[in-house]
Every structure is written in C-alpha cells, then in structure tokens.
Amino acid sequence: MNLTLKIWRQKDASSKGAIVDYQVKGIEGDMSFLEMLDVLNEQLITKGEEPVVFDHDCREGICGSCSLQINGEPHGPDRLVTTCQLHMRKFNDGDTIYIEPFRAKAFPVVKDLMVDRSAFDRIQHAGGYISVNTSGNTIDANAIPVNKDNADDAFAAATCIGCGACVAACKNASAMLFTSAKVSQFALLPQGQVEATDRVLAMVNQMDEEGFGNCTNTGACEIECPKGISLENIARMNREYLKASIKG
Amino acid sequence: MSGLIKSSIARKVAMALSGLFLVFFLLQHFTINFTSIFSADIFNELSHFMGTNPVVQFVLQPVLIFGVIFHFVMGFVLELKNNKARAVKYAKYNGGANASWMSRNMIYSGLVVLAFLGLHFYDFWVPEMVHKYIEFAPEDPTRYYPELLHKFESPVRTGLYVLSFVFLTLHLWHGFASSFQSVGFNNKYSAAASKFAKAFSIVIPLGFIVVAIALHFNQH
Image (cartoon, rainbow over all chains, first blue to last red; front, side, top):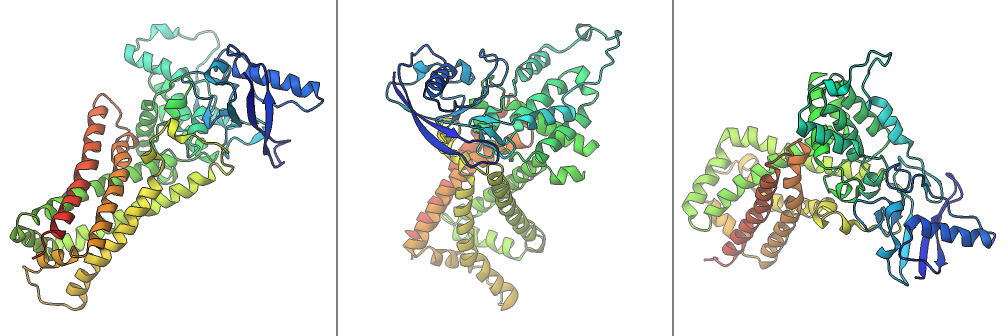
C-alpha cells in the first residue's frame, strides 16, 4: 500500500517543530508500524535526508519504549497493543496518517517523535519500591500468604510498562493511571503496606510537581493503555491518598 | 493535611464532593418545583417555608451559594491547569475514540449551566432578596405560585430554561457518575451506582423541563 505520512519534525528540544508530509510506497500489511517507519527512514537516508527519530527497543510490546500518537490516538487505532505491535493491515491503501510525539508539558520533545519520559522515573523513584534488606537473609515472598484476588490485582497493576500512553491519551495530560498502577502494585501486597502512607504521598506529590494535569475521569487512559490497566487503580490511589493525608 | 489541600487528588475529591452536594440540592429543588404543576397551595406552602425559615435562609442558603461558587471556580482553575499541562496541542486528536463527548466537554456544559444560573438568579433570587431584605415587604404566603407562573409566560424564557436543562443533563451524565470514582468508590456496586447516576441525570432535568413547559401552557 501507498501512504501519505504527516510527521512531526523537530530538530531539538529548543527548536520549533512542524508537520512535514512524506509519501511511502510498497508497505505490506504484515509490517509493523515501526517497520513502516524503518522503510521511510531507508528512503530518507538514500535521498541524503535526515531520518525520523523515534523511540523503540524490544519491538515485542514489553519494554514501553515505543510511543507515537497515531491519527490522534496513542499507539494507534488498535487496542491493547503498543506501536511496535500495531500492524499496517489496520490501515488502507491511500490513507493519510498523522504521526506525532506524545504531547505533555512533562514529556518535552527531545527530537522529532522522541520525548523525554524521565518524569515517570522520578515518580517511581519517589516511592515506587519497598525497602528490603537484600544482604542474603531475604524471606521468600511466597512464604507470606496473599489473598488471591489481591495478588491478581497487584499483578495486573504491575503489567504497566510505563510507556506514557495514558498521559498522551488524556485530554488533561494526567499521569494518574501510571502513578496509580505503581501505587497499587505495592498497596495490595503485605510487603508494600508497611510503607504505603509515605509512598502514596511522595508519588502523588512528585506527579504534581512534574506538571501533569488533573484527572477528570474521562477514562481515555484505560481505553488506550496497551496493557489494559484499570481505572480501579486510580480509585484505589484516591482512597490510599485520602487515608494517608488524614493519617500523616 | 497541607498536602491534601494543594494536591491534584484533593482538588478532584473537592470537585466531586461539591458536585454531589449540588446534586442533592437539585433533587430538593425539583421536588418543590414539581408540586407546582398539581397544587398551587402545596407549592406556596413549601416556598413560604423555604423563604422564611431562618435555618434555610441564613445557614443552608449561604452554604449552597458557597458550594456553587466553589464548584465553578475550581472547575475554571482545573481547566486552566489542565490546558497548561499540554502547552503544544496535537495536530490531530481523536478524543471521541476513547472518551465520551460529555466527559471531554464538562467546561462547556458547565458554562451553559453557569450562564443559566445567572438568568435564574436574575429571575427569582435577586427579586426575592430585594423583596425580603431591602424593601422589607410584608410576607404574603400565597405570592409564590403567581410569581412563578408569571415568569414562565414568556416562550423565550421557557425555551432558554429547557435548553439549559438539556445541558444540565450532559453535565450530570459525566459529573455525577464519575464523582464516585473520584472519592475512591470503585467496586462491585459501581455499575449500579453509575446506572442510578445516569438515570438521575436524565430524570431530574427532564422533570424540570416538564415543570417549565407545564407552567408555560398553564397561564390563567
């Protein structure tokens, strides 16, 4: 298939970017979206032009590196997949596809389609861990009985790959789904409950300091999340935060 | 506690609680209005009580006004903050793919409801305050129904009220149902709570519309 691509090009963080039109030919339906961009970049390199910069790593949906706002949706029109798992068969010959970086004040553009998502790392550093002595006397986690429902919910929350699609999809650029998944995966387990109060306060505080927007419950994040992280996590974080604020 | 006042979650909970308070007020307002279409006497009696009871006038009324002001001022603050959180907008944004129109346009449905409140205050609240607390006019317990009827003589005003109630439905459709999520209520009862909130969002504004139209066509 032949496609018209409208791609955001931006030289560096301080330059002003713009949408640039490109034509790509001979795209197969079995190609992934990133492979289609590889084809475009080969064309650009052959012509002596600068290739389009975009984030990618594992290309199997587990690393959270790839991003891209495709036709107005993070990771494109498919559900429960990352951009690297999106196949070109989801598009038709002659289509025009808008490809933009994930937009948020807290995700500044580095170059073209690559954004700096280290705000997520800082939220994680603020409290997304448990303090365990790892000197060799660590108790096996399986020795502690855990309610099956809680274990399942904690696991589901922990499948968040931190790609930032929730922020990109949200009309307010809110990071509540990501932060709530990271709060929940610990809050649901006995090992995480010891530091639950400090954790939720520190992580929400960091989230606010990074300049993310406020959640207005549109639910866009849950729909666009490639891992299907549930809005229940946000409700849990709200409860945890209120509890911690009153206690602390 | 200071973190609770400044944080994004505190703002979200405050919006939800003030919204729930206003929902409760709407139910009470509707109940009184509804009596007007079948009994002028009951409407007069209830309005006289609400208009002269010191607890209603000097405790509940100021609390309500504070609740309304808080809700819309916080709504504006959140809208401005959220706009800032994405300074550079998308060239193409397919919001309809993942969220309802109502949830994405609360500021616009809210603005229409706010404009309506301006008209509604001009129509009823301001004359009422002037009557009672500026002119100190003697109280006539039978005045309320004729005053109400007189306001709905105009087809333009009746039309504006009806249109505003449609926007109230749009605002409540997202606001009421999602307030449960904001206060941390998301469990096996959430689906039922959401259905109740959505039914409320249609039934109560529709009831207000029925009252407005009934009064318009019931001019003596």
